[in-house]
Image 1 (spheres, rainbow, N blue to C red):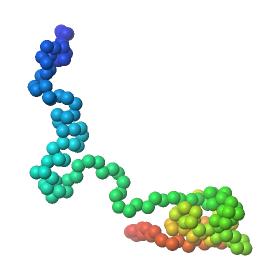
Image 2 (image 1 turned 90 degrees about the vertical axis):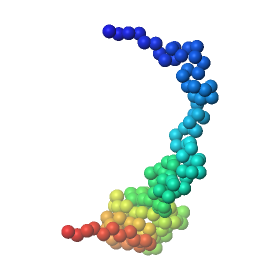
Image 3 (image 1 turned 45 degrees about the vertical axis):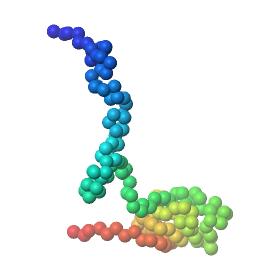
Image 4 (image 1 turned 135 degrees about the horizontal axis):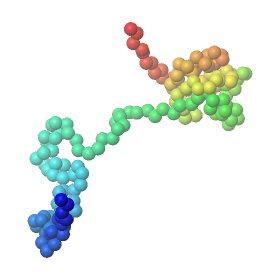
Length: 157
């Protein structure tokens, strides 16, 4: 059988604290020390040495690696082919004979990827390079000089 139940707020009409005791209580988050991770565990001096000893930190840490993290800004052969003449006219790249000399680090790129086909012979200076890009460039007659080689060895079984 369905019954009509009065809500608690209606039952508490006439009781000036609505069941929360003192008038000071139940005023936002001030009664409980704040919202979220704030409160006595963060402020009290008696708990802080224990937390330091156990290595407990309060608050968010995020997802990213907190140490040195290098942002990768890659470039493909398609983009290089499209921008090559512009780089030569603006003197960001050199052309000696039929070979283009490009310093990708000076242009703001630090990794060469192998999407597309190189249209001309190029000597490219870059920090990181994929193996596919190096093979494609050597097939055309160019070469890549890697300033910092990133070697990932595969385990042979």
